[in-house]
Length: 414
Image (cartoon, rainbow, N blue to C red; front, top):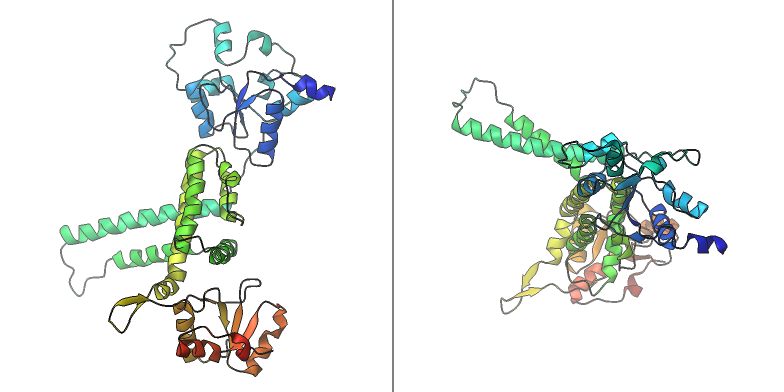
């Protein structure tokens, strides 16, 4: 209790900004500083005095020093040690950058004049602070590691852009300056490069299992929300846009604090925020690239079903009417033993009537397994999920024939 009272006000007048540190450590640093009377800002501003960072050359560091040369760029240990010693300690022993580096990073037009004491003050430390012994603490700044897979994806996207511009140049040159090739001349490499670009595009849009699981989980949630009026693709994009806006404001962690839906945010966003926190340009860029990857994946994998769901049929008066939603909430897995012709027809009906067809069984997501007979049903009994119903294909065909949803009870195979 005494310790808490002593800590209260120890950092009065200090305004901190945090960069490059993820939760829960970020929240702990902020809370500890606030207990000692400090104030917190998500972005560097004129009131800010201290930048708590894990990275010495991040954009926030450069921004801080360009706006205030006396800004103190220090490690998080300064906060914890101030709290444990019940007083404001000298920041110099916790500095993340050397004075000369501060001069290089700061956007300073000073002509270099002034005394040594004035230079010391400009570096953010008084002469007395510099003379304090360093026996209390030796800083051990943390080093951040970027995810190799994210770096690889980043480079791959750049390669796509380069290929696109190269192809344009080749096409323009070939049509405006190069003579036509004779039939015996060797073909140019334009087609080869276009094929290479297509292969690169395919690699970029291919998501790993974790990302696909993210999409499936969000899709399951999306299906249960009757108040969401946008398409699933737009819903996913809105999630990323919220994260991007928070990142542009300087505090991407606010996205998770403001997350309103009863479902976790995509793991991809959490991973990107952890890796690029404090690097605003890279953070925003990676979020935008990942959002585009998700959108391309959804376009490639979901377009046929979305088009069927939004399809129109001509009624008796030749007016365009929307297809009915007899199978809303149904996520069906088609048995492998079904003839290909039957599979195609069943998928057409299920999707047209607002259901979904899964490519494989998803526990807790798939609701129905469609089979051709009782013998085929035995292949699915080991799933052991009570919520999944194994039904004869005639259930779907009967719904289409009667033009209404009929109870599946008569078609369930126990």
